[in-house]
Length: 402
Image 1 (spheres, rainbow, N blue to C red):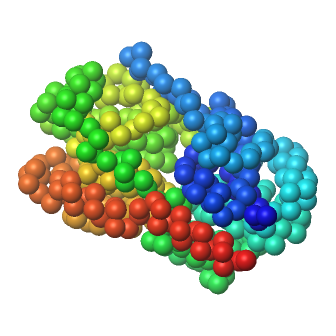
Image 2: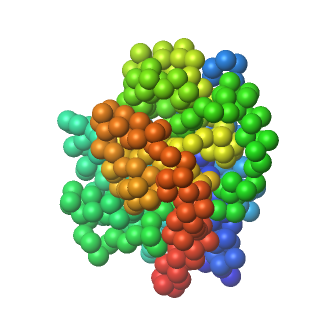
């Protein structure tokens, strides 16, 4: 009989970021997935502009069950601080763990980590693993930061092993004194799930595909396209990106900016003037949420990702696998994937001038510059972050606990 492993995330969308990994593990263990039952509409708003709208279709626990071939158990978890609901969730998780008697509970995302590790500790699950893929608390201040620091330490105390998904995150955890170094380990060269470079492959798209999508968005053949993929929120540097693009576009009329992703207005809203510019600027193309982002990489020249904080950003790996250079901020994860002047440019976070300088520099680069060497950009990702190699490293971690 296979030993049981419970994998837990706050929302199914986060479980989707582990695509393929859970199915891979079923060859070795019985995998149970726990998350909220479906997308939390209160914390995710799909963007709409010029009649373009797409609703996420891969954000339910049932779809994770079908995709990964695993048993799932819904437990409603919230991404906000909700003490009463959180206590109920801990009790539900505790009862599940006592009934299922898993060998390992492995959690992802902050709330699932706190509640999952606490419940697993109370239920005496022998191996309690938590992956850190970003730390929202780093941008919190005042009493909220103090509270989140305490919660973070509780999570780490209840866990038997912590896996930061970047070396930068590991350093931050140690600097903040959340736990001791012996409890920390980065899998491979970083990332929670790696990237499927056979899926993110520019060879799957033709010049005709590129021309057709560009035309549908009002982008000319000789336009230079900056791309952003992710949530349209303050912490992703969208306020700075929109400000800088407006200034750049005043000089370079052939520049376009494509934004792919949803707003999260109640969690991390943009400035009103930023949203107004997105909705009205003729050279900003806001397409909302897309289940398949590959066509948008294919029509673009560079990913522009000025985030304030990350764990190990999938979108930067996706950009490289699709052959694009990336402009990223000098934060953990981003500055591990991108090597300055090799496969992208690195700028200070929260710095509009630095971002503008980088966007201008890459606009003026020759197309023969190494930054635009699609094969090199792709190979750098394949060599370091191929998905199945990450899965095998995680499996080794599990098997070492047998």
